[in-house]
Image (cartoon, rainbow, N blue to C red; front, side, top):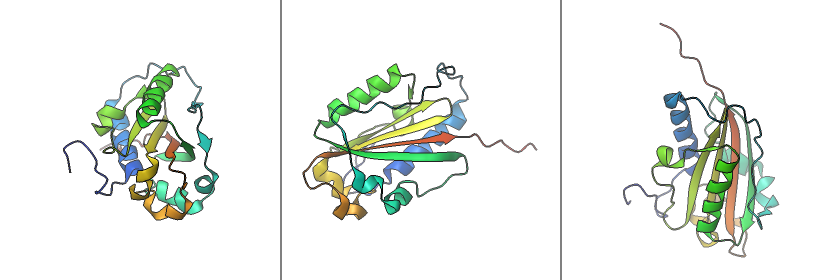
Length: 178
């Protein structure tokens, strides 16, 4: 495995890494959020992305996506989309649009490198107590992606890229006093 990068041959629980990293970042930073008054948590959707109902309505996929239930995360939601757009174009658009809407891009400080080898990427954003993960896997690599490998029969056969957007609310767990 290349330092700082995930490789397609190594199974990585992408969403679990993202959420764990966000938990650590949120609890460790303790910084004031400059977007504290911005309560619009509407997420932008990349133009041309099409909702992919096969996985959006799959209870087993939901369970796999949110496999590690943490007491301080509530209201987990997700949507799966397909798009023929290039990985880099979609990634750059999400970084730009989320920041414009007041979300803090915490991807690099949490994950170091946001690339999933050449097969995709992961981004993490925070606004107040809301945490968003945006994951994109290239269509031809989708069967090898950890979270998607079990759902080969449900994946699109047209080679389009898969875009997964997750959102949950983070509630800090008070530290017991000594």
